[in-house]
Image 1 (cartoon, rainbow, N blue to C red):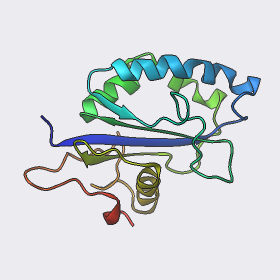
Image 2: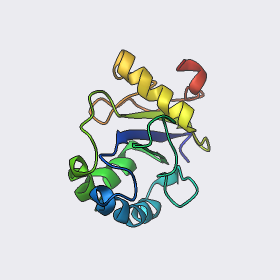
Image 3: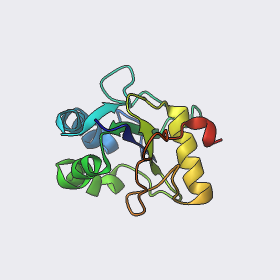
Length: 162
């Protein structure tokens, strides 16, 4: 069993509120894509709110258009297979129809001890760390990944990100 799993967070700003026809197709696909993730080999956990998605969770309480997605996977390869080689890819290719173009890093990856479920605060700290320092062992991207910690070393949690 892996001693570490891969956590991911991505945030975006919807072009219209959930319930608006402009983002209806995105919202209508959430259950299908979430169910696909849940069935993927290597899937461990995903953030959910009051429903089976995270549309009611606000990374910025003052911005009702901001959306968040967080999940944990057994490996970078498992997450990449879902993101780039499943039906998720087709939805992701259309993200500009529903989300404003990001002006800074909007996603981050990091290693967590197996069994750890990061919260939104931890995920947002990883994005801030990536924005401030670029990719490193505490927060990285698909383009510049870092290996899981080896041996007895534990994956760093939030206190190292402050």
